[in-house]
Every structure is written in C-alpha cells, then in structure tokens.
Image (cartoon, rainbow, N blue to C red):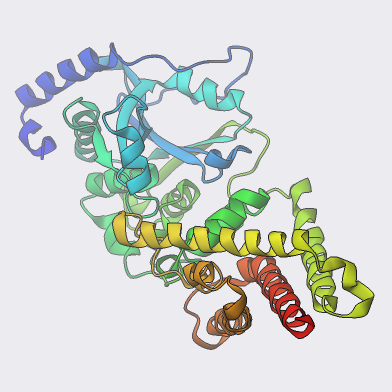
Length: 414
C-alpha cells in the first residue's frame, strides 16, 4: 500500500506536499455562514476526528453520513475526508447505476465549509477525537491521502458491504493495526441489514415499500457488528464504546456535538406519512371485500369492462415488476436483490394466464403463492415480506377473483 511506502521522513514529506497540492484543487462545498458550529479548539499538533452526520429528511439522506477530519497545523491541514461522492459525468454512468456497478469517490474538503453545509440541512453533527498514537495517526493520514488522489479515489460501491461508512471503518481499522475488526467480526449485530433499512426508511411510504419489494433474502441473514458498521451511527457507537484500542485502551478521547440539528443520531422520527399504512390496509380490505361480491346479483354493476380492465392492468403491473426483479437477479450485480421471495407476489407467470381459459388456475396460483409467501417467514425465517404481503396480496386476490367470477358467469350465460 501507499502508506507502507511513506514510512521514511522523506516519504512523509513528499506525501504531505502531494496532499496540499491536491486539496488546493478540490472545490469548496456550499456553506451557510449564519449557522454557528461548536468546533473544538485544537489541542494537539496532529488530530483525527470521526465525524458523524445524522440522517436527513430526504430519502437519500436516510442512512446518515460520516467522514474523518484531520487537523495538522504544521501542514496547513484542516480537511474532512469521506467516500460518499459520485460523478454524473463519469463514463457509462446510467449503465453502471442500472447494473449495480456504481463508482463512488474519496474526496477531501475544507472542514469548516463541509460541516457548515451539513448544518445548513439541519442535520446533527457529532465529532469524536480518536485517541491515536503518532504512528497510528500517520498511518491513517497516509491512507486517506492515498485514496483522494485521482488515480485511486474511485471504488466500486456496494450498498451494505462497501460504502462510505465501511470505508471509514476500514481506515480506522488500518490505523489500529486490525484491532477494530478483530474485536467486532465475531460480535453479533443488534440488527441485520433489513431491520436497519426498515427502521431508517419507514417514514417515507413509497421509498420504504419499494425497498421492501426489491430487497431479497441476502439482507435477512444474521450479520456481525463489523458488518453492521455499514451505518455511520454504528461506527460512532462502536468507536465510543471500544475498549483495548487506541492509547491507554480508549479509542474516543473527546466527544463534541458540533451542531445539534433537528434529528438525533440513531433516532427515527415519526412522520405524517405513517397514517398511510393504516389507510392503505383498510382500503385494500375494502377492495377485497367488494371483489368477493363480484358475481352476485347485488354487485352486478361491477361486472363490466372497466372492472376487468383494472384487474388485468394490476396483474400486468405485478408481472412486469416481477420481470424486472428477474432481470436484476440474473443480469446485474445488485446482489441484495436475489433470491427474492417477493416473486411469489410479483409473479411473471401472471402475464401468461390472463386469458379466459386460465383465469381459474390464475386465481389458485395467486392464492397458493400468497400462502407460501405468508408462511415462509414465521416457519422458516427466510425473508421478511409482511409489509409487501399486506399491500400487494389483497389486490392480487381481488384482481384474480374478479377475472375468475366474471369469466365463470359469462360462460354460464353463453
């Protein structure tokens, strides 16, 4: 690695010259000078701080963010290093996005400017001064400097296994000589990938439902505390509670709330969107109840082209979504998509069974698939799908029942 080649005094001198040259070309992020940040005073000539930014209200901010802030006055170094940027202008950006091969970048910014930008979004900013020896600090600095150089700054992004937070985790682990990974790889996590994803997205209805639909069985297995640090808040908690690391066995030397923000770290605020779950559930039960009446004289008015058209349209939509899941499973690198038992609900076979002669098998296929999807979680624990089942299965049942009853009555009248 680069840091290993920079161990001599001459090597470190050349490295810092490269650093100052590189940082002079990085654009400053937008700031809000009207906000007051509680920046800690400089106490040492070399300081490394773990910066944790709380989740924001916008969907892509829901998982939070983090960075490492290096302060070294002798090198005019006062910058944050993070791994959370991507470039829309990169070659084949759309193809990379669709196929799950997104390139993210490691960049460094003036610390005051970047922290002001996050404060301007109303997001809390927490800082923890890492209790590192001079050798550990230099190992961390050299590692980060190497990664922000243009030839080295791109990396292949993975939602859970290789993201902006795991890169910060890895950098700290490198500085500690592997002590962080050694202490956490065998430690069970408090929650798995799906649990954390649900917790942090449940206040945004369609975002939550979309993720629950596309995420498959890989996010349901048990993970370690090391894996759980795909979230910035978990990195911060682990660093704060770590023993036997850093100098004198304490990794966090000082902790400061730089900006209080509107949201607490680790908290999930309730949103006015949550009432939609109850309304949706009640509405779908009503739809199912009405559909069960289709075919009786009392509800004869529902047996028309519009009803059949709506039923077919819904099943075509679910089949189409299922085909997209299959394509993502087979032809892309979105590893968290498959295997996915939601294909029992978004079944591509539906599209081939909408003819009048197959509507009865279609109804039984929808019913059997729903039962399998419903029972697999409590009995086998393969994949959590309760939310998707509650919202999709009643509509599948209603659509298939309407087609079956109308087709049956048409044959009886013929």
